[in-house]
Image (cartoon, rainbow, N blue to C red; front, side):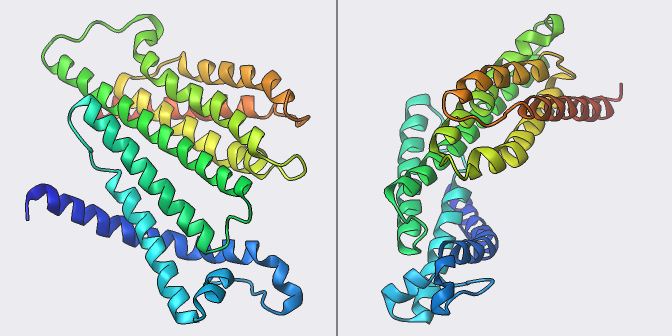
Length: 282
């Protein structure tokens, strides 16, 4: 077995185990949420480990549990493989990344269909759009990481240019990530959300995706280049562009997104600059 094959095997096993650890509790809660309508039939439990739809399809509780665990492991393994570089050259990297995304999307579709999580094609479309958004965020994050590594190499070779005013040049590679996080993703979630229960855009995005995304991206930028004062206002400006566009889809009040995005990106910038200063000793 080659070294690369050992790396793939290790990531598959590690990702699969993480997938089991994460998806078993989340899947149990989701099974209970999706099958909540079975209360009147006496099948409702606070935590439904095995999908009722899959158990009815297989005709066996044990077999349904085995299939469900296999699907969880496969999803985790797919995520684990994604942590390895697929190729060294640009065209091969894009081609293999698209193949991996297609395989992951097919596996997610199979899982949601068998477990009864996709009660309609619209619901399945929401899952796939979320997968694509997460994939794009990871892709942009890795691209920023490669760009930063190249900058470190130039710096060690003495080829790095002097810092730009307000570090605008250092901030530029992070702007596509900010645009996806603060403009494109909330618009997509708003279009996918039902008008009566905006779960994705009203709860998931403002309280999880936006604060975590702005905090981590600002932290990464500041850890590599020091405090970059233009990044928090850029996130706020993109959210400000989102506000009137969101009004075309619904009448929700999205003004709290501005302070959330600005404050968490500013916090990430301060924390990243502090870590950089402590590591460099000045």
